[in-house]
Length: 189
Image (cartoon, rainbow, N blue to C red; front, side, top):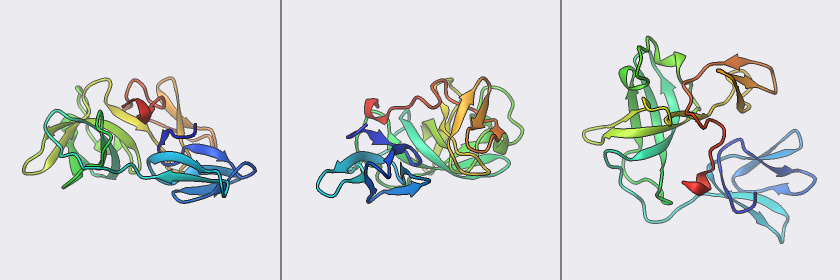
């Protein structure tokens, strides 16, 4: 797992093997990623670290497929922060605050955006507009939630059939998920 791109909450190591370092936290003896980035091990101090992936920033354009984190969900829209452009191993420059109108969430009718996404979810979306504001869509089957956290205990949800289940507290939730929910490897993006 060393030198892989990880998402917040991903298990990196145990506290018996390594100490938590920059960009990580310890929870019940497990060291987890606190941010998206590259997982590295500081061999000298035996620390797990997650370094942000940085270089010359990329400018968003219409048609880009992006990874975004849901910041807020309202009745008719989802507000998400774009954190990565697929195919570009660089940070995003300029405005990263995008919205998904309820009609752009799925091909069918969606009454309430909160029935499809929750704050904290990581989603794959398509940029459908850049100016004057970033507009995203998740209508295609390969778009949607790729990682979600339990609303009760904030642990990662595992896909079981058509529902997402928290193995920590047993809570069951529903999201509009991408076909490959839970199988994302940012290293291959």
